[in-house]
Figure (cartoon, rainbow, N blue to C red):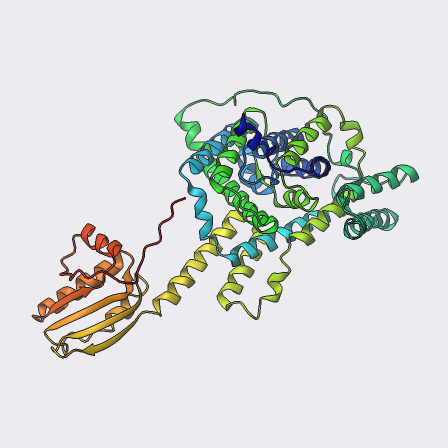
Length: 513
């Protein structure tokens, strides 16, 4: 029983009013996003709404980050659109289930800790790119279909009316928290704009103009696809990419919310929750999804800190679909546009602009590059992967230049090379250049008290150096090798003669979590 209470955060102090109001606000904001992403993927609007309900509910209950909101996302929609067009929704549902299984496996294997390898410059670039995408996506709301059914920009009175309502929502969201925080400013903005439109009979764009959200409870069914190797070979690449994109976006969102709330989420638990939610989404006619930074920020900035807000958001979304579609379809899109514009403003890391003069140039390049790739390709996973690879290469290059060797000859005529810095693939060339084999005495000692052998390239460099000294009839000793370095040499079956002297300062950091 105690575990159940902890699961729903009942053991913690929860502001139920704030949680419920924040959840209601998030539910309203989820509707146009879910509909839009479903249409992007070439699926029916209800497919996106069902995914938002299932993803939001399951991850709110089981996830590793209370307050984080999941649902149908653009990153997932971009991955599955080609499959939806070529093979239809049933194959999409099967892909979503398989992607969920991959994500659960990632959580069980504790791969969530790999997010530690994402540098802060990459996170800055990811967040800034996502903020720009959110803002640019709202520009489409200023377009209406013409007589031929093509979208064109609003002009004249409709434009000024829509713009006025958007500005009204923005001002309320900006100013109300300065006066009171009793109710979420985002919810007040939606209700006020709704009231203005209803009171004055203003003809403006509504949720119903995008698509109908009327439906029933998500129907359960097993995806109608052939269960054979051919189907698996078809959907596996899509499922693998979807699983990777979903986990990267979810775990980055988790890290960002950790910083905002000054708490720590559980990445591996979130992987399992995301996977479980996607499995159920595929079986309940949903397109799948992952964590949503924009909606998560709406939730957190509204004051929500527990799981209850996410549960309320998911349940209310289902209520809107089943019973309140006629009312929700009357909501002015201007209110939701103003809300998402403020989300974009809040998402952007403005502090990153102030660090341009203080950050290393390589970090600035990585941050800008990740932002540009995110905006241009709308592929968050690829942008993060590129950023991590470039950061790793820069790190390797910098460390390759840091290897140093201090040389001395003791009273017995033995020459000592005291190394500083890691010996790995990037520093092998610089390492080899340190030694004067022909002119060195008959006995040489390499001191590793301030260095370590990192990889196979380092072992091979030591092996070749030993052979070169051996050919000259000279003896080479390695001293102060740490235990993990000696294990590397043993596993490699190295021919190196080693004098074992314990390193008095070197310790190996072991992750016990």
